[in-house]
Image 1 (cartoon, rainbow, N blue to C red):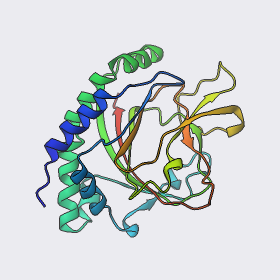
Image 2 (cartoon, rainbow, N blue to C red):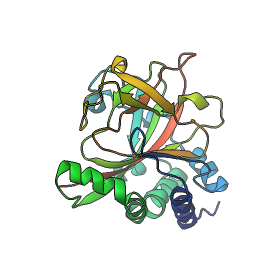
Image 3 (cartoon, helix red, strand yellow):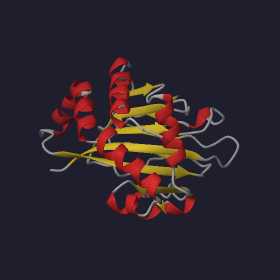
Length: 241
């Protein structure tokens, strides 16, 4: 298959720019048909086998609710461990579709909310880098409200399910019941202190994204029927200074 990575980047940038970024309860957006259909099919076909993923609990589990999550950072080492067709796909995606040029476009689209976050931190953005992580979540208990890691500036979750069967298991956003509550990241919080505002539909070829700040509380609601499988590709813009 001849995969057009550049067309996929332009398509995604256009779809994201055309879709409203909402301010309530914190800056977030949801985008449907985020990639060309054939490119989404190529992502699904290139997903690694289960044994390529590693537990996230050791480094990503401050509250003990990542036990059922496994991930694979898409870096040189991970790509080198894949078979040739999959390695070629993920290398192309990382370098030409979801790379620094894509990050620059996102920072332009979200300039206002990102600038507001920097003012709240009282320091400029400065240096930044991009990062890609594949997650395969088999848990039913969900993920508690949190705001994301402090270095993150933008977080994008590309949803990769094969169908709409688990559409209610997308990212949930929360508003703290204490209006003065803020958190710059790291800690996961008890659900009792939050109102569940909305859940992004977990649909094929869709995207949930948000600006990380001290109010960007999000998580995953418990699965109503126990264990579900959620394949997600996460793209981060992380500050480096």
